[in-house]
Image 1: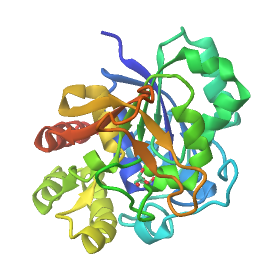
Image 2: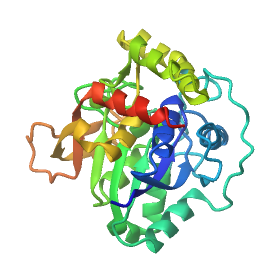
Image 3: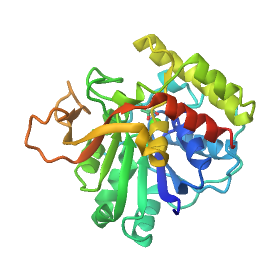
Length: 313
Ligand code: RIB
Ligand code: CA
């Protein structure tokens, strides 16, 4: 079967980096048409630079990286240096990229690609705030019907918030964008904290990355060593949650995940619960289902896939 055509929209971010590495290590499964950077974990100048750093770490400097939106649609940018460090990729010391960004804006790339590729043949993989995707949908509403699937990391139900008591970071940063995306009518699959908090890089799993002995394996181990502080301190987790790689792993082995097709609405009106994904997990409303919301993961299978694929780079 031909590899699936995807656009990765991202705010690297150590976990974004691992998601990108997994994708670039899986050419038989995924054809990465482009990587679009968005402001999120750190400001855009850093997320776009980090995307290039990761492509070069993967040995794929020919990957097309596009600069996108530098601020949410209707709010001031909120970043997460407290989690990802000043650079957004704290942990390993990786060289500045020599590859250059594409001239075209990320939103134009998304629109043009969705219009030129056969209808229903391109999957969008947002790993950060949904600003780029929502802006593309606002500017070109016709693309909604041309998207094969939107597979995104964001939101939470049972796990509730990681940036506020009610909201997960990606949705919280740009709730207006999330509302547009969840209302666009394209098939949506969501990897919420409910799943990603079960994809924890325990010491044993991180040692397996390091034991690869390759620049990629060691860099991923060092990224995780840095990235896990926040969650260990806040949740007492056994290790860093690999949020964004759940998106890539789903595209390669969907059977690793289970969830429900339910209605998910985004809170944009209340300061108290801004950015909350109001997931009708128990079917208590008559609101139409608009997303497949994942609830569980085969964590051992996930890490086996991830480690095997990273070993290829
Ligand atoms: O809440 C976790 C999400 O926010 C991840 O995508 C992480 O990279 C940050 O973007
Ligand atoms: Ca991210």
